[in-house]
Length: 338
Image (tube, rainbow, N blue to C red; front, top):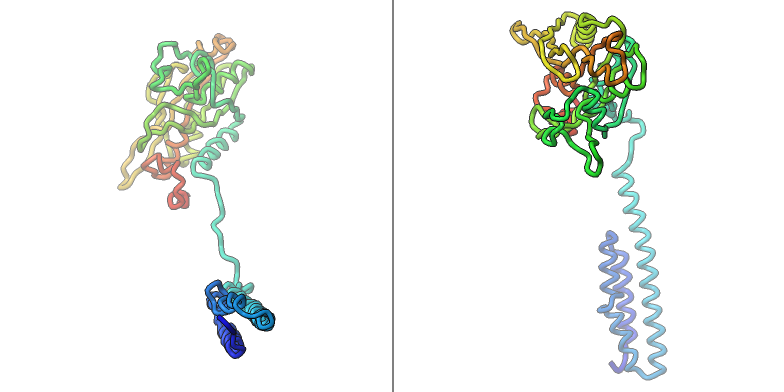
Protein backbone atom coordinates (compact mmCIF):
# COMPACT_ATOMS: atom_id res chain seq x y z
CA UNK A 1 0.00 0.00 0.00
CA UNK A 2 1.61 3.21 -1.16
CA UNK A 3 -0.79 5.60 0.61
CA UNK A 4 -3.76 5.72 2.97
CA UNK A 5 -6.64 7.97 1.98
CA UNK A 6 -7.75 10.36 4.76
CA UNK A 7 -11.35 10.00 3.64
CA UNK A 8 -11.08 6.25 4.17
CA UNK A 9 -10.04 6.82 7.81
CA UNK A 10 -12.85 9.31 8.36
CA UNK A 11 -15.42 6.96 6.80
CA UNK A 12 -14.19 4.06 8.94
CA UNK A 13 -14.45 6.14 12.08
CA UNK A 14 -17.95 7.31 11.23
CA UNK A 15 -19.10 3.74 10.50
CA UNK A 16 -17.46 2.31 13.61
CA UNK A 17 -18.89 4.90 16.01
CA UNK A 18 -22.35 4.49 14.47
CA UNK A 19 -22.14 0.71 14.93
CA UNK A 20 -21.10 1.18 18.57
CA UNK A 21 -24.04 3.49 19.23
CA UNK A 22 -26.45 1.05 17.57
CA UNK A 23 -25.39 -1.99 19.64
CA UNK A 24 -28.44 -3.24 21.60
CA UNK A 25 -26.68 -5.38 24.19
CA UNK A 26 -23.25 -6.49 25.36
CA UNK A 27 -23.10 -9.39 22.90
CA UNK A 28 -23.80 -7.06 19.98
CA UNK A 29 -21.18 -4.65 21.27
CA UNK A 30 -18.56 -7.39 21.39
CA UNK A 31 -19.28 -8.26 17.77
CA UNK A 32 -18.79 -4.56 16.86
CA UNK A 33 -15.45 -4.52 18.68
CA UNK A 34 -14.23 -7.61 16.82
CA UNK A 35 -15.46 -6.17 13.50
CA UNK A 36 -13.75 -2.76 13.83
CA UNK A 37 -10.84 -3.36 16.22
CA UNK A 38 -10.07 -7.07 15.97
CA UNK A 39 -7.09 -8.75 14.35
CA UNK A 40 -8.86 -9.01 10.98
CA UNK A 41 -10.48 -5.58 11.09
CA UNK A 42 -9.99 -2.85 8.50
CA UNK A 43 -8.33 -0.67 11.15
CA UNK A 44 -5.75 -3.34 11.85
CA UNK A 45 -5.11 -3.71 8.11
CA UNK A 46 -4.59 0.03 7.73
CA UNK A 47 -2.12 0.08 10.62
CA UNK A 48 -0.13 -2.77 9.09
CA UNK A 49 0.04 -0.76 5.83
CA UNK A 50 1.87 2.12 7.55
CA UNK A 51 5.18 0.36 6.97
CA UNK A 52 4.79 0.92 3.19
CA UNK A 53 4.54 4.71 3.56
CA UNK A 54 7.35 7.23 3.52
CA UNK A 55 8.35 8.52 6.99
CA UNK A 56 6.43 11.82 6.93
CA UNK A 57 3.17 10.27 5.72
CA UNK A 58 3.66 7.30 8.08
CA UNK A 59 3.83 9.73 11.00
CA UNK A 60 0.74 11.66 9.92
CA UNK A 61 -1.41 8.67 9.06
CA UNK A 62 -0.22 6.82 12.17
CA UNK A 63 -1.43 9.65 14.39
CA UNK A 64 -4.80 9.66 12.58
CA UNK A 65 -5.21 5.88 12.95
CA UNK A 66 -4.21 6.02 16.63
CA UNK A 67 -6.77 8.77 17.16
CA UNK A 68 -9.37 6.59 15.44
CA UNK A 69 -8.51 3.62 17.68
CA UNK A 70 -8.63 5.76 20.81
CA UNK A 71 -12.00 7.20 19.80
CA UNK A 72 -13.31 3.74 19.06
CA UNK A 73 -12.07 2.32 22.40
CA UNK A 74 -13.56 5.26 24.28
CA UNK A 75 -16.89 4.81 22.52
CA UNK A 76 -16.81 1.07 23.23
CA UNK A 77 -16.09 1.71 26.92
CA UNK A 78 -18.89 4.26 27.27
CA UNK A 79 -21.41 2.08 25.44
CA UNK A 80 -20.33 -0.98 27.45
CA UNK A 81 -20.99 0.89 30.70
CA UNK A 82 -24.41 2.03 29.43
CA UNK A 83 -25.44 -1.45 28.32
CA UNK A 84 -24.17 -3.04 31.55
CA UNK A 85 -26.27 -0.57 33.54
CA UNK A 86 -29.32 -1.40 31.42
CA UNK A 87 -28.67 -5.15 31.85
CA UNK A 88 -28.35 -4.76 35.61
CA UNK A 89 -31.56 -2.73 35.80
CA UNK A 90 -33.37 -5.36 33.73
CA UNK A 91 -32.08 -8.15 35.97
CA UNK A 92 -33.01 -6.31 39.15
CA UNK A 93 -36.49 -5.71 37.83
CA UNK A 94 -36.88 -9.37 36.92
CA UNK A 95 -35.62 -10.47 40.35
CA UNK A 96 -37.39 -7.74 42.29
CA UNK A 97 -38.77 -8.82 45.66
CA UNK A 98 -42.08 -7.57 46.93
CA UNK A 99 -41.25 -6.96 50.58
CA UNK A 100 -44.94 -6.48 51.37
CA UNK A 101 -45.68 -10.15 50.63
CA UNK A 102 -45.82 -12.54 53.61
CA UNK A 103 -42.85 -14.91 53.89
CA UNK A 104 -43.07 -18.34 52.29
CA UNK A 105 -44.12 -21.00 54.78
CA UNK A 106 -41.43 -23.57 55.36
CA UNK A 107 -42.24 -26.99 56.72
CA UNK A 108 -40.97 -27.22 60.31
CA UNK A 109 -38.32 -29.87 60.88
CA UNK A 110 -39.01 -32.75 63.20
CA UNK A 111 -37.21 -35.90 64.37
CA UNK A 112 -37.16 -39.04 62.24
CA UNK A 113 -39.98 -41.51 62.90
CA UNK A 114 -37.60 -43.94 64.65
CA UNK A 115 -36.33 -41.16 66.90
CA UNK A 116 -39.90 -40.18 67.74
CA UNK A 117 -40.84 -43.75 68.67
CA UNK A 118 -37.64 -44.29 70.66
CA UNK A 119 -38.24 -41.11 72.64
CA UNK A 120 -41.86 -42.11 73.34
CA UNK A 121 -40.69 -45.48 74.70
CA UNK A 122 -38.01 -43.84 76.83
CA UNK A 123 -40.50 -41.30 78.18
CA UNK A 124 -42.87 -44.07 79.27
CA UNK A 125 -40.23 -45.90 81.28
CA UNK A 126 -38.59 -42.78 82.68
CA UNK A 127 -42.06 -41.89 83.93
CA UNK A 128 -42.07 -45.25 85.75
CA UNK A 129 -38.81 -44.42 87.51
CA UNK A 130 -36.28 -46.03 85.19
CA UNK A 131 -33.00 -44.32 84.30
CA UNK A 132 -31.31 -44.41 80.90
CA UNK A 133 -28.04 -46.38 80.55
CA UNK A 134 -25.82 -46.49 77.47
CA UNK A 135 -22.80 -48.49 76.33
CA UNK A 136 -20.42 -48.95 73.38
CA UNK A 137 -21.61 -50.31 70.04
CA UNK A 138 -18.30 -52.16 69.53
CA UNK A 139 -18.50 -54.55 72.45
CA UNK A 140 -16.32 -57.20 74.09
CA UNK A 141 -17.58 -60.75 73.71
CA UNK A 142 -17.57 -61.07 77.50
CA UNK A 143 -20.39 -58.53 77.81
CA UNK A 144 -22.19 -59.43 74.57
CA UNK A 145 -22.17 -63.20 75.23
CA UNK A 146 -20.40 -64.62 78.29
CA UNK A 147 -22.07 -62.65 81.08
CA UNK A 148 -25.44 -63.18 79.40
CA UNK A 149 -25.31 -66.98 79.62
CA UNK A 150 -24.65 -67.41 75.88
CA UNK A 151 -22.36 -70.40 75.64
CA UNK A 152 -19.25 -70.63 73.46
CA UNK A 153 -20.92 -72.96 70.92
CA UNK A 154 -24.14 -70.95 70.66
CA UNK A 155 -25.13 -70.24 67.00
CA UNK A 156 -25.35 -66.51 67.75
CA UNK A 157 -21.56 -66.41 68.10
CA UNK A 158 -21.00 -67.57 64.52
CA UNK A 159 -19.93 -65.04 61.89
CA UNK A 160 -23.05 -65.81 59.87
CA UNK A 161 -25.04 -64.10 62.65
CA UNK A 162 -22.58 -61.74 64.33
CA UNK A 163 -20.30 -59.05 62.89
CA UNK A 164 -16.78 -59.31 64.35
CA UNK A 165 -14.43 -56.31 64.39
CA UNK A 166 -11.35 -57.13 62.32
CA UNK A 167 -8.03 -56.81 64.13
CA UNK A 168 -9.41 -57.35 67.63
CA UNK A 169 -9.80 -60.53 69.62
CA UNK A 170 -13.42 -61.27 70.43
CA UNK A 171 -14.78 -57.77 69.76
CA UNK A 172 -18.14 -57.56 67.98
CA UNK A 173 -20.67 -55.00 66.90
CA UNK A 174 -23.19 -55.63 69.64
CA UNK A 175 -26.04 -57.89 68.57
CA UNK A 176 -28.42 -56.45 71.19
CA UNK A 177 -28.32 -53.79 73.90
CA UNK A 178 -28.22 -56.46 76.62
CA UNK A 179 -24.44 -55.88 77.11
CA UNK A 180 -25.40 -52.54 78.64
CA UNK A 181 -27.49 -54.45 81.19
CA UNK A 182 -24.47 -56.63 81.98
CA UNK A 183 -22.29 -53.53 82.41
CA UNK A 184 -24.85 -52.00 84.78
CA UNK A 185 -25.13 -55.17 86.86
CA UNK A 186 -21.34 -55.49 87.20
CA UNK A 187 -20.97 -51.91 88.44
CA UNK A 188 -24.21 -51.05 90.23
CA UNK A 189 -25.65 -52.81 93.30
CA UNK A 190 -29.41 -53.51 93.36
CA UNK A 191 -32.01 -52.12 93.29
CA UNK A 192 -31.61 -51.53 89.54
CA UNK A 193 -34.17 -50.13 87.08
CA UNK A 194 -32.66 -49.08 83.75
CA UNK A 195 -33.54 -48.90 80.08
CA UNK A 196 -30.86 -49.26 77.42
CA UNK A 197 -31.63 -47.65 74.03
CA UNK A 198 -29.30 -47.89 71.06
CA UNK A 199 -28.33 -49.33 67.70
CA UNK A 200 -27.53 -53.00 67.27
CA UNK A 201 -26.05 -55.05 64.43
CA UNK A 202 -26.67 -58.47 62.90
CA UNK A 203 -25.26 -60.14 59.79
CA UNK A 204 -28.68 -60.10 58.12
CA UNK A 205 -29.48 -59.58 54.46
CA UNK A 206 -31.66 -56.55 53.77
CA UNK A 207 -35.28 -57.27 52.89
CA UNK A 208 -38.72 -55.94 53.79
CA UNK A 209 -38.50 -57.11 57.42
CA UNK A 210 -34.75 -57.36 58.12
CA UNK A 211 -31.87 -54.91 58.34
CA UNK A 212 -28.25 -55.38 59.45
CA UNK A 213 -28.64 -52.24 61.58
CA UNK A 214 -31.63 -51.75 63.85
CA UNK A 215 -32.52 -50.14 67.17
CA UNK A 216 -33.65 -51.52 70.49
CA UNK A 217 -34.74 -50.35 73.88
CA UNK A 218 -34.05 -52.97 76.53
CA UNK A 219 -35.12 -52.79 80.13
CA UNK A 220 -33.78 -54.34 83.32
CA UNK A 221 -35.11 -54.45 86.87
CA UNK A 222 -33.23 -56.20 89.68
CA UNK A 223 -34.34 -56.01 93.31
CA UNK A 224 -35.62 -58.17 96.13
CA UNK A 225 -38.93 -59.91 95.56
CA UNK A 226 -39.31 -59.17 91.82
CA UNK A 227 -41.74 -61.61 90.16
CA UNK A 228 -43.23 -62.45 86.79
CA UNK A 229 -46.30 -60.53 87.90
CA UNK A 230 -44.19 -57.35 88.12
CA UNK A 231 -42.98 -57.98 84.58
CA UNK A 232 -46.48 -58.46 83.25
CA UNK A 233 -47.82 -55.38 85.02
CA UNK A 234 -44.95 -53.25 83.72
CA UNK A 235 -45.42 -54.39 80.13
CA UNK A 236 -49.21 -53.96 80.32
CA UNK A 237 -48.77 -50.38 81.53
CA UNK A 238 -46.23 -49.74 78.79
CA UNK A 239 -48.45 -51.20 76.05
CA UNK A 240 -51.45 -49.16 77.12
CA UNK A 241 -49.40 -45.96 77.21
CA UNK A 242 -47.98 -46.61 73.76
CA UNK A 243 -50.83 -48.31 71.90
CA UNK A 244 -53.99 -47.24 73.73
CA UNK A 245 -55.68 -47.71 77.09
CA UNK A 246 -57.96 -50.49 75.84
CA UNK A 247 -55.10 -52.79 74.85
CA UNK A 248 -54.36 -56.11 76.52
CA UNK A 249 -51.23 -58.23 76.41
CA UNK A 250 -50.48 -61.91 76.54
CA UNK A 251 -47.26 -63.76 77.33
CA UNK A 252 -46.37 -66.88 75.35
CA UNK A 253 -43.62 -69.24 76.56
CA UNK A 254 -40.35 -68.82 74.69
CA UNK A 255 -36.59 -69.20 75.23
CA UNK A 256 -33.77 -66.69 75.57
CA UNK A 257 -30.37 -67.66 77.00
CA UNK A 258 -30.34 -64.83 79.56
CA UNK A 259 -33.89 -65.15 80.93
CA UNK A 260 -35.72 -68.05 82.56
CA UNK A 261 -38.65 -68.30 82.22
CA UNK A 262 -38.88 -66.39 78.94
CA UNK A 263 -41.87 -65.11 77.00
CA UNK A 264 -42.86 -63.50 73.73
CA UNK A 265 -45.25 -60.61 74.43
CA UNK A 266 -48.22 -59.86 72.16
CA UNK A 267 -50.49 -56.83 72.24
CA UNK A 268 -54.15 -56.93 71.23
CA UNK A 269 -55.49 -55.01 68.27
CA UNK A 270 -58.76 -54.46 66.46
CA UNK A 271 -58.46 -54.49 62.70
CA UNK A 272 -60.77 -53.52 59.87
CA UNK A 273 -64.28 -54.95 60.08
CA UNK A 274 -64.01 -55.43 63.84
CA UNK A 275 -61.51 -58.29 63.58
CA UNK A 276 -59.50 -58.92 66.73
CA UNK A 277 -56.00 -60.29 66.93
CA UNK A 278 -52.59 -60.20 68.54
CA UNK A 279 -49.29 -58.66 67.41
CA UNK A 280 -45.94 -59.67 68.82
CA UNK A 281 -44.07 -56.60 70.09
CA UNK A 282 -41.20 -57.77 72.28
CA UNK A 283 -39.41 -60.55 74.15
CA UNK A 284 -39.05 -60.67 77.93
CA UNK A 285 -38.45 -62.89 80.93
CA UNK A 286 -37.02 -63.25 84.41
CA UNK A 287 -33.27 -62.73 84.55
CA UNK A 288 -31.55 -66.13 84.67
CA UNK A 289 -29.85 -66.68 88.06
CA UNK A 290 -26.69 -67.64 86.16
CA UNK A 291 -26.60 -64.12 84.67
CA UNK A 292 -27.05 -62.50 88.08
CA UNK A 293 -24.26 -64.64 89.55
CA UNK A 294 -21.91 -63.98 86.61
CA UNK A 295 -22.43 -60.24 87.11
CA UNK A 296 -21.66 -60.42 90.82
CA UNK A 297 -25.23 -60.22 92.17
CA UNK A 298 -26.51 -62.58 94.86
CA UNK A 299 -29.08 -64.70 93.01
CA UNK A 300 -30.41 -66.08 96.31
CA UNK A 301 -31.36 -62.62 97.49
CA UNK A 302 -32.26 -60.77 94.29
CA UNK A 303 -34.44 -61.51 91.29
CA UNK A 304 -35.17 -59.44 88.24
CA UNK A 305 -36.79 -59.19 84.85
CA UNK A 306 -35.61 -57.97 81.46
CA UNK A 307 -37.27 -57.12 78.16
CA UNK A 308 -36.22 -56.02 74.70
CA UNK A 309 -38.28 -53.86 72.34
CA UNK A 310 -37.47 -53.47 68.65
CA UNK A 311 -38.03 -49.80 67.80
CA UNK A 312 -38.45 -50.48 64.07
CA UNK A 313 -41.07 -53.13 64.82
CA UNK A 314 -43.06 -50.81 67.06
CA UNK A 315 -42.87 -48.04 64.46
CA UNK A 316 -44.03 -50.38 61.70
CA UNK A 317 -46.92 -51.74 63.78
CA UNK A 318 -48.13 -48.34 64.97
CA UNK A 319 -47.87 -46.54 61.64
CA UNK A 320 -48.64 -49.25 59.10
CA UNK A 321 -45.16 -49.37 57.55
CA UNK A 322 -44.88 -52.54 55.45
CA UNK A 323 -41.21 -52.34 54.44
CA UNK A 324 -38.43 -51.68 56.97
CA UNK A 325 -36.29 -50.19 54.21
CA UNK A 326 -38.63 -47.19 54.07
CA UNK A 327 -37.32 -46.22 57.52
CA UNK A 328 -33.74 -45.85 56.28
CA UNK A 329 -33.96 -44.54 52.69
CA UNK A 330 -34.55 -40.87 53.63
CA UNK A 331 -37.35 -40.46 51.08
CA UNK A 332 -38.93 -37.09 51.93
CA UNK A 333 -42.32 -38.25 50.63
CA UNK A 334 -42.33 -41.06 53.21
CA UNK A 335 -40.87 -39.03 56.08
CA UNK A 336 -43.36 -36.20 55.51
CA UNK A 337 -46.16 -38.50 56.66
CA UNK A 338 -44.79 -38.54 60.19
